[in-house]
Amino acid sequence: ATPTAILVGTGRGALMGILFRNGEALERAQAVRRVVFDKTGTLTEGRPSVTDIFTVKGIDEADTRQRERELLYLAANAERGSEHPLAKSLVTKAGPALLTAQVTGFSAEAGAGAVAFVDGRLVCVGNRRLMEQRGIALDPTLLTHAEALEAQGKTVVFIGVDGCLLGLVGIADTPRPEAKAAIADLQAMGLEVAMLTGDSEKVARVVAEELGIAEVYAALQPHQKVAIIKRWQAEGRGPIAMVGDGINDAAALVQADIGIAMGKGTDVAKEAADITLLGTNLRNVARALRLSRAVMRVIQ
Ligand code: ADP
Ligand code: MG
Image 1 (tube, protein in one colour):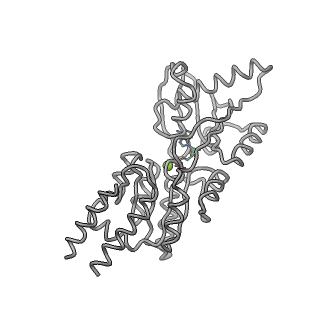
Image 2 (cartoon, rainbow, N blue to C red):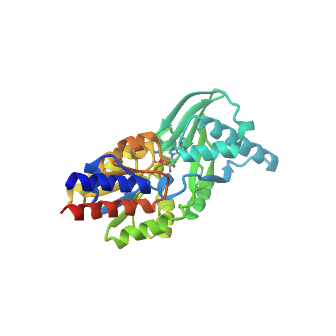
Image 3 (cartoon, rainbow, N blue to C red):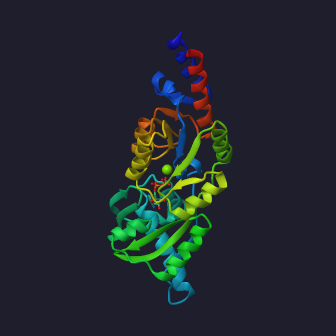
């Protein structure tokens, strides 16, 4: 009866848009006690859009406008080769007319940003850590703008050119409509819920509060997501399910007892996962765990 129940369970899952990698994944999911979510592209739409642009002040209004256009041009072209949602928002904001630069030496810096030569100028687009790594000093006025944007729950992306800070953009990404209900579903099942994100503390807090998640770990690099999951496992707080969408989540999805990849996520995440959700309905996380519990109850 055991293999039959599992076959039926995986089949039922598939009908709901929940793909279990194998029968063992379906069995293991039943014991999950803690569910952790990546934020960007997982709890949020991952279709963020540029809402604010600030540059180092020009000599007059026209000069400032010119700098803003230059910032968008350099940032968007540097990000053309990136599949990160923040990169896509810059590309979208710039539009095809601005995406005409000569770009060479593009490199994605996991959990930090992107670097490329744009028309021969070295452009760094990313968070504070990337600016620090590249020796780009942050201007106090721009930092004030950055803090104001973060207080609104926006992600701040800094743009450095040839070693100097040119400015920053504010990018807003809204939670998926069903995210709050999906978290509540899990909490009602007696599961602990936490967020692990590469985004800044302030942005993470605003989103987490909106969704009813009390436990938040922010400004994490991919290997730090793995380390936190390992620590919980060592402390006996598992089994742990991790839900993510990006390349930056792949290692954490593997480390977790159950890795769950979003259907619209990257292939790397799906390859690393035990469960893949077709589509993006976050309520399928609780449904997957409930299905596993139901199947295992039948067997036991
Ligand atoms: P999350 O865990 O929220 O999905 P990531 O690990 O993908 O976030 O990225 C962490 C942070 O690094 C982002 O919030 C952003 O500040 C920065 N970042 C990463 N990739 C890029 C990029 N291509 N362009 C700009 N910023 C980036
Ligand atoms: Mg992500």
